[in-house]
Image 1 (cartoon, rainbow over the protein chains, first blue to last red):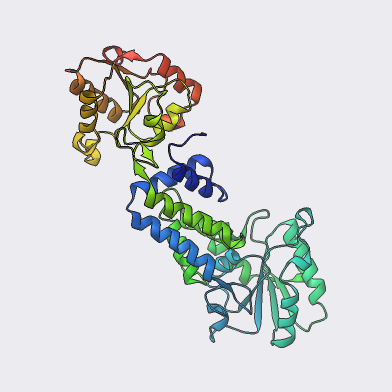
Image 2 (cartoon, rainbow over the protein chains, first blue to last red; image 1 turned 90 degrees about the vertical axis):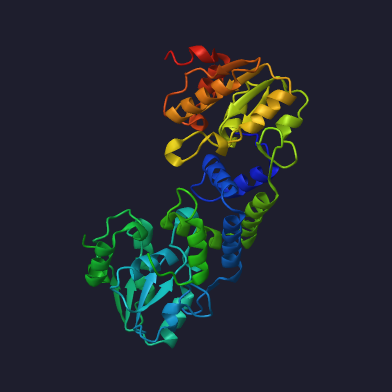
Amino acid sequence: MNEYSSKLLEGAVEELSRLPGIGKRTALRLALHLLREDAVATHKLSDALKKMRDEIRFCKRCNNISDNEFCDICSNSRRDENTICVVSDTRDVLAVENTSQFNGLYHVLGGIINPMEGIGPNDLNISHLLDRLKSETINEIILALPPTVEGDTTGYYLFKLLGPFDLKITTIARGVAVGNDLEYTDEVTLGRSILNRLPFEQSNKR
Amino acid sequence: MNEYSSKLLEGAVEELSRLPGIGKRTALRLALHLLREDAVATHKLSDALKKMRDEIRFCKRCNNISDNEFCDICSNSRRDENTICVVSDTRDVLAVENTSQFNGLYHVLGGIINPMEGIGPNDLNISHLLDRLKSETINEIILALPPTVEGDTTGYYLFKLLGPFDLKITTIARGVAVGNDLEYTDEVTLGRSILNRLPFEQSNKR
């Protein structure tokens, strides 16, 4: 599909099809849908995206996506400040929150150690985790990392790194199917995997 | 998934998930993708959508999407001005154009007669087609409508309506599988269906 009758349409389709999982055909369908709808709908979408991108911040404490200097979870005085759940991604914060089984704080690494993609420990938000362990009173770190080789590598790296600190290091139970994203795990399974978390030393006895 | 850590993220996810075929989870994935990318990417997308919606026009002749008063096809002096291909939708113009088997003009109805959805002939761009037949010199009308019951109804309605005019009325060959959208038909099949078009009277002998 090379020729659109409109450069404006072509421009919109091109930008939409840069999004992951959106091909040219889907992009065209979305653009034509917007043209059929009232202009207000497109303005709302356009403004919401721009506003999000320009104004969103990352929590200074846990690196989660936030509207303010500190995110709602870190600002909530009813959360248990002595437990940190380490996740790779903001989506995993949402996934764990949805289980209602965790009342502590988070630490978002912003990725996972992946030598194949050239992502090493220094590319992740790890040194700030060490700062937190020094300045906050943390009793337990829960590693809620993806159940993949890269997740295991990252977990093992953190386990070694955090060894010198006086705290319990646990990992979510392997109720989660290996190879799946946390995000796509049902809430009951993910919730149970938090309740049944194991000391890290036992976690590789599958 | 009820709680995002950010109202800004929530707003963007909400607007994205209004698009057809985009659920909350996909919308979240797209929003987080934009947050990971440079802000320029979001601005380009946001601007392209708004610009398209605000500035796009419909060709005064054929009702196709256009950047100007008349679309590129209607403005092209090398097109055969005596043949009109009637389609329901802009996407079908693109589909027919991609076959490179048609060099005439188009007429975009902007839908199809569908009593179940309350869409009657008066909701479509039909009276303007009659105006064109009076003011332009048209020898042939090709009906390239969806191969569905509604498409057949619309075709039959147009065939009856256009009867009094001195012109050939044809319909694209039924090489297109019944029930499929023109848009999703491969170019060879769709191209052949234009080359093998039949006089409308024969078109129902399947």
